[in-house]
Image (spheres, helix red, strand yellow):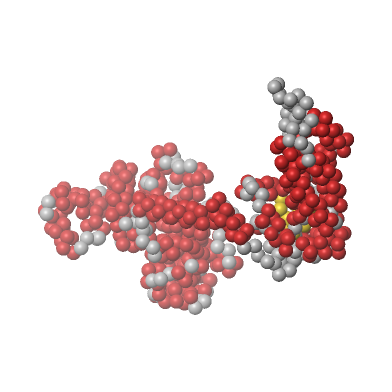
Length: 209
Length: 380
């Protein structure tokens, strides 16, 4: 897995120190370097945040190819509007905010083109977009499919809050900043999302316990 | 702490979002309450289950290459390069993103407050538009006052080329005027007024205003006459090339368009008076021609033309004056017509109070032979 991550960063192509740099540079420093015109600094930002961003987008849209395209769009937008970032320390939150916008726009565009597709109308196997691989064979495909289909059944706001809290471990304050929701709304949405997810994954909870 | 206080906060406690004091209370309660402890454990189990969720996503070097290419090319629409989801990012989305930073700094408004603000803005805009329109559009009183002001203080133009016409010319007319100027090269400003516009304006000013029509014109009559003498070709060109317009320039007018195409002719301010005189004469002669026959009890050999006599005397004086003016302006058709109708007016004016039918008939016969009514119709 570690090798996979290293390969993904392109470190095998002979750029020693990049991996370490991605972990050690502070967000403020990286942003400052990008503003000074250092393209390499933006690459470090990408390496640091691309995985949580693509996971978040994938949880929102449910399609891997689309998630990759939207991740690309997210980072391109981030690069172009980096001058609007006021608090460099909140780079991560800012990036998630852009990713949220990109994902929601895509969902709305798809909604207009295809109409709403609810979880009850779509089998989990169709919602789960994965190709067989050695790694995935080790995982519980059924559970993954159930979780993903349950996520797809949540409405957009609940899915957004749930994903940010449960999968991305963001604080309420960060979620409010990313989504623009009030704390009260996100608490309500999170509570209802948990309840809905619990109802759908209930049969699998026993196996965990 | 009781369960009904603890359970609503159990998720926040699990998420670590409570303050330290509340967290301690809940922690103490959960340690002694089986139900609340079960709820807390359930959240832990769920979280554990979610951690097993594996998306099997990879951040490939190709993704970074695609981002780098998009940035270098200045193409902020990577979906276009992948063409797999070309429509996922609409143009409005880009606008939202670009203006997103601006709206982030603004306070979030509730839908009701936003609606109320929108209604207030619309109301203000409507009020401003209404006020602007009421300020720009003159009322009939304004028009009357303006006309009175113009009549009482007619401007004295410094030269024929800068004299102001009596009629108000709209911007559209000015634009058309420019085109006509380019076309005709008259050497002075010509105001072009569409016939339809003239009719519309006639609604604003029902009564002819001789002062307004002739006040300016009288002041540069000499200049107009000189111009007509010096530029007969230009005037002829105006007469023949502008059939759909009424061209006026402080006294020189070309009348045309619609039913007036057949007899386009030259008019100046003096001739306007001639035309009015001709119209009144026409009415008089028509009235004379149709004078009622004597009724029973009256003298059958006498006719009642007292009204026509009185009117004829008035018109006779006017006719003499206009005929002499026509001579000055060398308007031969007008002078000839005035000379033709003058004997008729004289005869009618000199009739007895109760003229004999023979006298009346002789005048009518002369009118018929002279085809005077037709001549008047043509001139009008």
